[in-house]
Length: 220
Image (cartoon, rainbow, N blue to C red):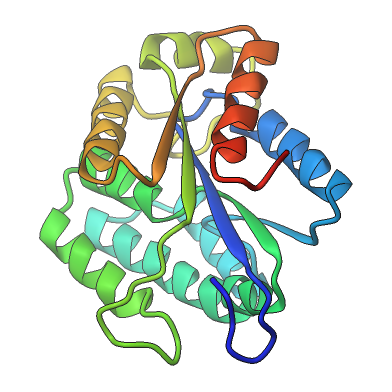
């Protein structure tokens, strides 16, 4: 996105996948590769990324609530995240690397919890309107890197992890629905997604991530 005032081009790259898919390692590797090319980066996450959104994250991860409350808190955190962090960074010309974004909401709240997809779409349209532009232009990532991993394999990876939060503690069937919902999002917008087979050695996964970013011309 080139801004009218600076002429700089900001890029938003989101990283998606079920818990245990291995996003974090490759986000940092990509950050290092982009910095080596002279790009200024903003690394952030959802839910979270701002002081307010991080407080909402703690509620979402640990406090019991129904699916609608959960969805509303997710989008409240996203609104503050966009206004306070993401949009200003893009206006500066940063590359924004975001650990999860709206696709996670459709996967976890929509697929996992079974919450109304039409309501999620409505909230998406209201919360993610790009400032100063036509109302029908919604902020989406320029690229979404989806780490696709079978829930059974992810569960093995998480077996020795930290004490699980209220999402990580969900049964395997929950994550099967989440994974299926990610696939549906990818099918609906294939040009934005780069599907990565996360059931590979780390070096192979990293190579696939590099190739996805190179295909957009953002790495040599």
